[in-house]
Image (cartoon, rainbow, N blue to C red; front, side):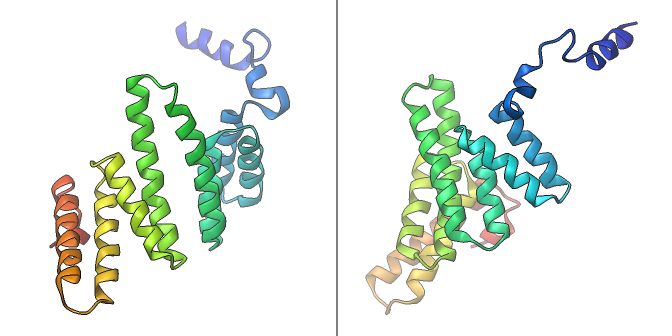
Length: 194
């Protein structure tokens, strides 16, 4: 009986239940972003990009994230970086009015963005900026193993170009410590073996 009632509600969607959030101007930005994810899962990058772009124009930061992913798939790290910075800016604005629970979520999201940004900046060869982004990620949220790992890798890369001495030794120690933190947070993180 209950299944029949639920089926009737599903099949009469829009007749008995308001669905304007799904249909007005292509649906809400959240709905258009979800639609883009479905297209992306079906390997239709063109329609996925159109839906993400539409949602991004309406200020949906998750659509910017998805556009960044599409740009990375195309090998366009600069476009990906731009899109991620747009998402970051929107989430940073949300922090101003966030409740404490929401602020914790936003801080974690911003840390993930900073970590992703560090990878994109490194791919562009902007190592100082990449290191600063990795450091920011660790400061925002210390529980992300990949942030520690990426910071350690960037420290190793920079240390490799230095002559032996105190600065190089400090960077190598910071890298070792970062790998240890990553491994502590995720014991299965084999790449972070010190």
